[in-house]
Length: 506
Image (cartoon, rainbow, N blue to C red; front, side, top):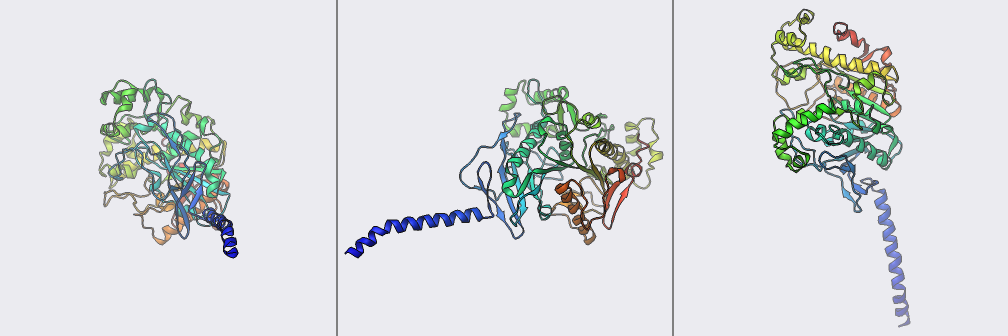
């Protein structure tokens, strides 16, 4: 009896010890679980593979329609981060058949190496287009494998981003504000994923690169990133008449719009929606807004003359008013071919040339040859894209180290789901994405795979130390030494201005 009694007396103590031990063991398991990360807002559980960790659909902010974003609310339980978050509202296109009508869409994704570590460079990807897309559509494993933490983000698009209206605070800047809020999230959370919050590279393509040009001049972006990579950016581009669409008038700025212009365009579309005030516009269902033809593309711009962009970024960059940091920036060799190809690959070259450049003998300088469509594409590649890229890089290089590039693989695989079989796409706009990311439709030949490895090496070396040069890579000088031409088996410096006939277009 006494033995039994003593055993029962010890039982609660034994149970407490066992429970405490179990708690410690499970607690250690949670801490050591590579799939779980404790963010500043709460814990998330991602996906772990043999080489990577991937966390998807992490909310970084919330925002009411046409209002500034705020950090996402905190949570206590482990949040599932194994699936992408909702895409921002969009109607898709012929080459990207994706749609969404969800405004609760400010999510991001983090890809890291599988091995534990800390102090890694962080690269934040801002996708292009401006009217469609999402962060999770970019597979960043190739870059993360180089010891980098990669963050890809959603941000508001089209009319939900660039909309302006009289009395609306910060008209035309909501997508930019989202991106800055995502960068603030990175600053708070990079270390939890093994990244260095003091070594952040913002990189993007096309409209994403344009946004980075804006952030370089935006007071709100100061200190949020330390390096910039701009691929086919449009910061200093203008647009000749008919360059993108026949009959479209010339534009002194390709993708910047004054606040007054943004509000005028907004009032025009508000009338089409049957609204005369913001309250009415904010009550409209998303699908009702998206049903208006071209409404997303009409606001594929950012507005200046407000607290986010006090002045037009092209002038600010030209006059040296931007946040100082190293820059890697460039374009593709045949930028405009994709736009000609998407329009059917047939053009009235003489009519287009006369409308865009009256009195200038463009056909003599750029003979039609056997394919007038390719001749016209070369004209606009040189006059609009190369001229804008050269102006941007030259202006930046007066103040900071700039590494210019031209992606020149004219056999690059087409990774977009578009027709145009038989059209010669060349080194088309955004073709280099298949070399930096895992684009599912793109099949690279061995020499192209080698180029992809070199490009990822350059991009990640730049993210690490502000200089793309590294062991085993062909030397890459700053802009004074030439622009780096990137092609399979042929990486060399070129005279970018001469290659694109910029003296003719001066």
